[in-house]
Image 1 (cartoon, rainbow, N blue to C red):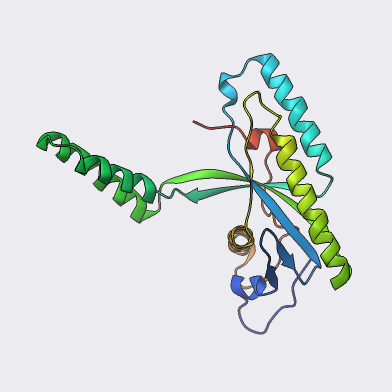
Image 2: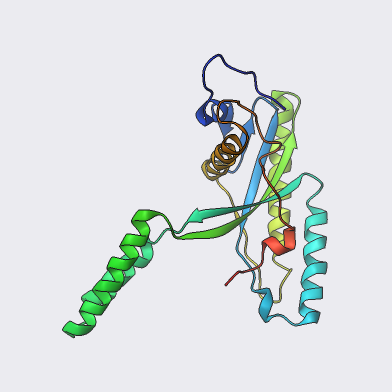
Amino acid sequence: MFWKKKPSQAYTQDLVGNIGILQNAIDDVERKTLIGGLHCPPINLSMMTKLELMDLRRNFSTAISNAGDAIQIKIIAEPVDLSDMIENEYNAMNQISDVVKQDLKRSYIQFLEERAVDQSTLQKERYFLLKENYRSDQDKVEKIEILKERLNQLIDDLMDITEDTYISTLLSGQKLVQILQIDLNYYEAKMNRFISQSPEFIVSGEEENLLEGLEDEE
């Protein structure tokens, strides 16, 4: 689907301007589509036995099937927020009396601060995205509730995919807008930054296998 071409350059904020932000969803007014999602932490598959992997695939498949057809995964390489780690290291350094150990800790903090500034430290974040289309404002109210139910059901179903309870969390409307902005920036850069073209749903580029997308790379 193409957006109406403007006589001047059309930037990402022009496209995002058609998005309504809800508490745990966004409203694509142009397409009459509601989008909600979950943040899904990675799973260390390398430590699992073949039987555990089979159970995981079966349970995961069931959870995804129950979520319906309108589901996609988004994997984004995002800068790591080191602020909490840096604060903890400062607190730890203040409790050290040995001068040499303090200097070592200070050097490590400096390293973390440099990594935080240059934004080069990245980690892959996984998101599951669900959508509901609506026809009118009245229908939108009903579809918002349906989307909430689907998201909460997916959270419950994902809890059972591993022996240890798997915890996924609801995305806020603000976070969903951030994901959309990243998508649009990537899509425009890949295609042509002077042509406004909206990626289908919220995902652009190559998609990865759902289960593989949850694998912890470490």
